Image 1 (tube, rainbow, N blue to C red):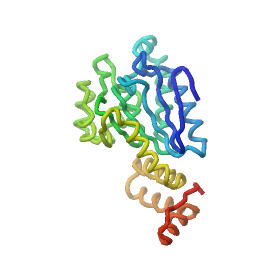
Image 2 (image 1 turned 180 degrees about the vertical axis):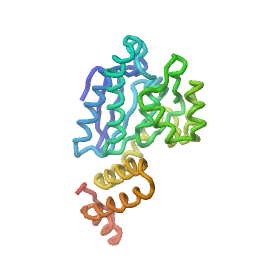
Image 3 (image 1 turned 90 degrees about the vertical axis):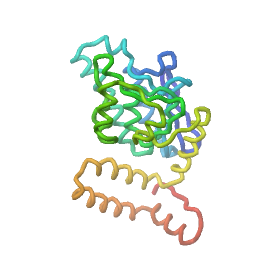
Length: 261
């Protein structure tokens, strides 16, 4: 699928969504967000896709943030009912997607770019990447879920520092903070991501779905509720053909062939 602002491609079981607005450093506006949502919906329904990669067009930016002129065009209620409503829904769709997602951060991921990274499962950064939540410098604050996701992922004092100062951080600092998984040379970024995605795609898509749901929903539960929730999920997993295929393959000393059943 190809649109003006979103490109999608597929290599085996790995699909890639590319935000394609390099002239604006891949800034997000409502049409782009809606196209992202359509692309995700289509890929999530496609059984041939097992892992979804998200990246930006060009070498400078993953997503440099929201489209500032667009944001400046409306006042509070209109923003709440239009842009904010859409971006929250779309980012939550990525966060709750039943298929593993990987951010291939090829450059600046600022504002909404960092907020989308926070909603994706695994984050691989080019050594040229920059992350940050600079909204405070515009008289704003992160309003696409950033204030809530980041305090659940890194120490509160560091989250406050990033949001209060608006400072950007480099890729290794992002990894050290726990915001990302690894840093790789920029010209090797997609090779590394495809290798990781391929390794994940070899696993059972059905079990990955149960695992993702367990991690997502369990994180919001007290431990006393999360443990029985996990217990019920592993029971469901043992009703799948893939679980028994994996165990049989181990006992028979062969590679497992997972079919998502």
